Length: 294
Image (tube, rainbow, N blue to C red; front, top):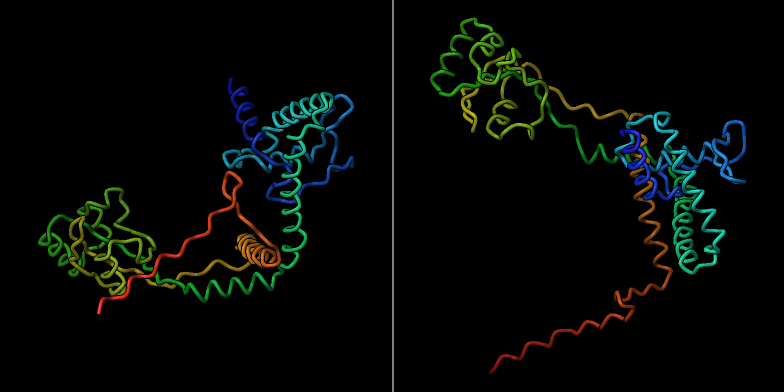
């Protein structure tokens, strides 16, 4: 039953895939040793590269499934598609106007993607991506982070008593485990590293203004009364350039593609019609306001 369900899902996924529009460049379907034939359908064949391409184009829910785990199902779906394609060709549907219209659409999509792959991506060098990386860092300076512990109680008086005990030598983490409403897990009230936006304003203001190693509070928030112990402060470290190159490339390609589209559109006469094919009515300028009476 699970195999049937998986086959149904894969069929739905493959039905929505345009093989030529996969995110990565297609593998040439050549009869080479590194691209073996994996199925015969009459006189037609299906290459492993076609299965790889179909796998790449599946919806996101299949991204965590290894290709080998669903390879057989993918091949079967491609076999089914090939059988239908052969039948359609035998029925003369390659001469059908609907087929020609859809093929024209696919041709435009493929040409668009090949243009992006061959013309635009060729301009995305490491230098271009590094310039984008530096620009992003300049526009988004690293935020300050704080590593803190806290104790949360219901009343200000209780918070003051615990603070007094800590200042006389009681351990903050042990006190948190024994008294804090927010440390029942034995964490000692440890909040880890956080930025300002992750805490309610009253807590964030007190924590980021606090002196490292000194107990701050009581601080009132919507949750109760807090004692805060800042253990350390630092500036957020940006991810290294090499770690984000794939995302940078995608971003730069998108921006360059959008700019190229606008550039190309400027040299083409474009007319957008109504859904029924008629020309839009020209906008009528509002009548001028009547002159005030003298």
